Length: 97
Image (tube, one colour):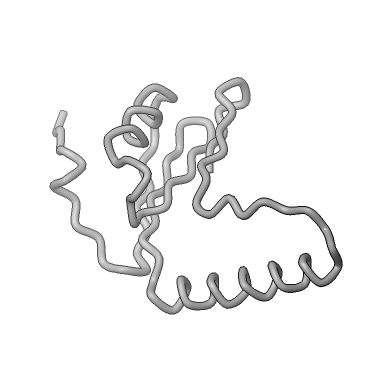
């Protein structure tokens, strides 16, 4: 078996890496190791882990759309919370994004 440290993997923006047979504990450990300021986006589903590095264009579009939604909600006088890059996870159904 070959083992690599996560910091040995280099990914260019816009690339995705799929890893299979990843345990929930491995997913949790990766999230902890990478911390809250990571650039990569992780999603986990029943043993399959996808790591994605977004392109700059995605981030620009995300900010514009987010600002537009905030203005609309404020104009409609609706309460909201901007959660940014929050990780949602549910071990019972082995899903995380």
